[in-house]
Length: 230
Image 1: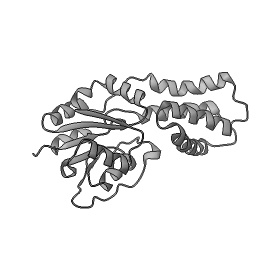
Image 2 (image 1 turned 90 degrees about the horizontal axis):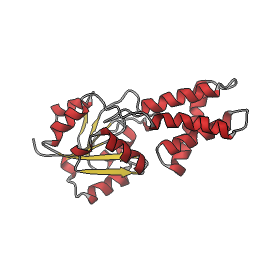
Image 3 (image 1 turned 90 degrees about the vertical axis):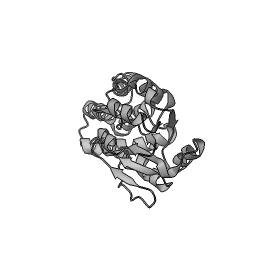
Image 4 (image 1 turned 135 degrees about the vertical axis):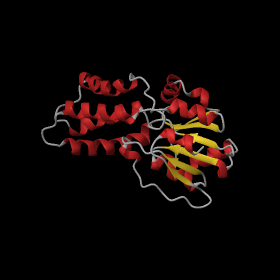
């Protein structure tokens, strides 16, 4: 097969991520123990607050901790004390302390792909946070370049293409998020591989777009299936 350039997402593509946030959110909602609002309503408020915090704080644990505190302030009947703030920050801290848990067969698949193709890691979030996860994962050696970006939109993909002088015809974006990985990549003429994840963050949900020729879209059930296509 002709050598391809594979841009690969990190969180919830190479390793588990959102499941830890979901556990922290469940603990927060239980801690809030609100008598007027259902857990579903509290989650809706948190989702909106997270959208707002992303605009001011970006992605990552720092932004998530802010969102939890602001949600508490909007919904709780009691004032936010330093002790309560520390407890709420603790929910986010549990995520930071969790070891990296790679998706099944990721390492074997990357070993296979790296022998035939150029692999680049493309992830969004806080630089220090994402860099730490990449180092702890033990997977960095498979990638010729690492790009940690503030947002993954059409402008970002266009920038990466120009910066690395990529040939769109043989460049693929591989990831679990239609909103961040698949649709914006297709919009700038790249190819894409959608690898669905059962716990993709709700703010990343979006219908998977159609590939306009000559772009191609491939959908696989597991990351390991990439070995059958590349």
